[in-house]
Image (cartoon, rainbow, N blue to C red; front, side, top):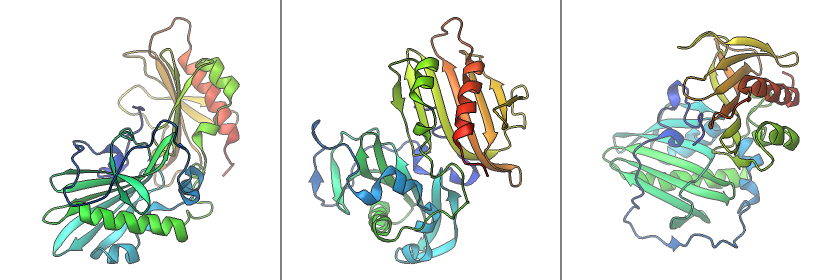
Length: 318
């Protein structure tokens, strides 16, 4: 698992990517079972409207609008979230409050499991008590899914989730709400394309394995070395946390903040806001380098700064 895959901002605690305790029990109502694809199956996107690039451009909170939520129940308040961690909203269904959470492009580690058929896609469904998670697989390699989680006491969370997911997929295929122009630097960008192969080979190794758990993170790993690039909505990277204050570093005209985290094994993080912060929060880019095998002579902070300069230079100037 990536270090940052479950970093969330305040309102996103219910989001699927970081939910815990969800088992793999399938709902018991009658559905068509779809076998997992064979090893020779096409691993690309199953629908041109559901490619990674298309999903990055979609506003998840725009999908959870009053029209969609009104078909499920009575909406309560405004949806809350962001392009990176997804969105959640509340509705009242038969007098009971339900929370609908939506994320776009999550990795699907249980891709080899059997699935149900929904909206023309393979959907992995897991139910636990009063919650249900439905993952509509959009591609197999790298695995991606549109994920709806429903938390609803006194109701049928899987039934609600299936209706919500079907409506979400239909909206994405026809007229998906787009992120506002200029509203985000990193949301539309593929983080896996921000570091060139030569740099990856130099900092990680010539046979580095690519690993990604969402549309907004990417890591390369080989022999204990890790280089990771990710983005999230977060606090000011210049503000000290529980460790010693971060060190300002020049990333080629962009000020980053370097934190050496070598308590367990040598590692270093460089972070910066890709545009001016609002209320001391904003879109923060993180470059992380870890030396898991404690290989001698590796300057993790030197590597992180070098990679940070490359990433910063490729980003649009806000």
